[in-house]
Image 1: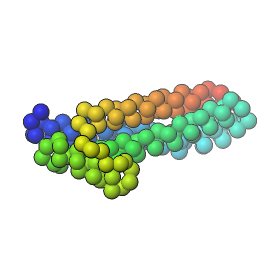
Image 2: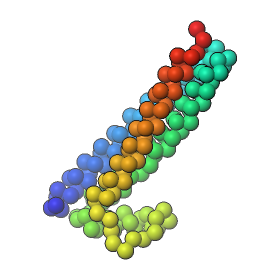
Image 3: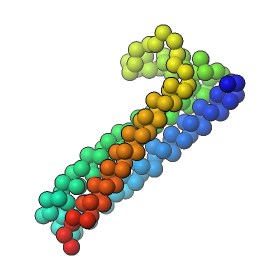
Length: 147
């Protein structure tokens, strides 16, 4: 891959990560800000299944927000990579930063871009699963709320 194509691909992936981290976090925050009002107005505190669903929704909301934060951090790392002229120097810069932050030990050679993207896609998949659990639990809590 040419240096220019590497920079474009890495920057585009970073921009996509920012979007993919932002919209689930925004929806979770919006839903969680409304949930207590709706639950107390409809008497959900007296329905055990609704309370259980709200607890699961709250727990999965925390997971979604945590994974969104990790994805934003990865987006910043990919932007750092894109700011360097080639894949080797960009990967070395990221590895150096992670080592100085004591998040990862220094690897003998920089990982290729494809491995880094694959690892971030795993985080993205986990975020989607946690978001799906949140949506199901949130809708279940609404279904079991007394009328």
